[in-house]
Image (tube, rainbow, N blue to C red):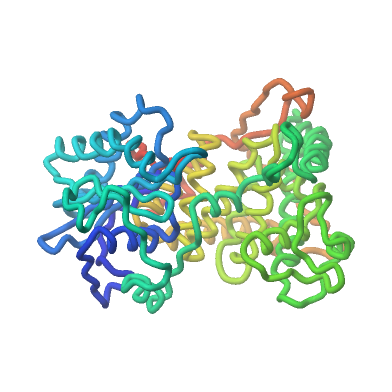
Length: 499
């Protein structure tokens, strides 16, 4: 669940106030509050003061089972009120949004009636906390419906069309403030998941490239996992760590090349073919340059910059906790922008039965997005990591810190200090994961050091594919790197993203 307990003006810019007077304006403002269109979501927004200033907000995927609605409603109301109270004041009112598109054979009116009991539960749960629900809206198929307004002149039972995109006062203020709506939540999540089968593809048939990536992961797991688990103290793990960080540096140079530059060595053949071992690409096969046609094309161009073997090596190598923590040091500036693209590309390569391994690249994508100022993308990535592994401590703590409005500079400072400490212990500078790489991409370093806690996930092969020991999963992140005010430990808040 995404939460943001800190109150803000009811405008994208704190220096300019906008008054929202109708359900239509409330419905139009929702994407600008979240940074995306919250498909298949329930959103609660706190209101403060006599003027109803927007405050904290929580978002969660709508549970598919009606039996879960009562407990979900109580949980959401408590999270919003407790979060606002931690930020300073309890809300004086709440606005509820239920956003869901019709299923095949349904209409928007069917969606409204199907979700009406859930809306009633939400209003009751908020009332039990002595906070009224000022408005409850259902947004479906380009229409909005009110559960609270009985006046059919402003809220007809068949719904009211939403304002055209970019025509409202809220849209104008957001454009002036530089705030962007990134599309729908579903679209943002699709950028972080392996490709799905195209429409019309026979049932059970996988998209191109999936089997090629699975074979690479199987082969890499057979090579890397024994080194991570060998009896010699930390030697195999150190070797894998150095190779992984060296490959990250190499790929970040490739991802960070200015638009129009010649493709980096190692990606030329893929770009020339306009493909990356079956993964669809939007790369011009004549020029080797990305065709700029939306995020799908940009992601496909990024997929073309990394081979299946390279992706497999990084995915397996990042399962080591210390390697992952050092990789988090690529977190700001141009290298941070390149790192976000790389971590997203790796998350898209975590095909079955390696889907659980996506927790590491998803967490890195969320951290780097938050560090570079993209909070909506950070919450989506961290939420997906928690969907995959609810006990993934690094993602949980980062999500909590992001949702509580903490400054990522606290954690950046900790990571810089960790890097300085390693460099001081190794005067040659080889302990710094961000150092330049030799021409061949090889690294030199000393083996040894304390062996970090690691746990192995073992499960049977899925459909006869994949090794039994599918990799090494990171254990809990130590408290030290996240100290200094980066997060506060305590009762775990509900910070999982929509399912």
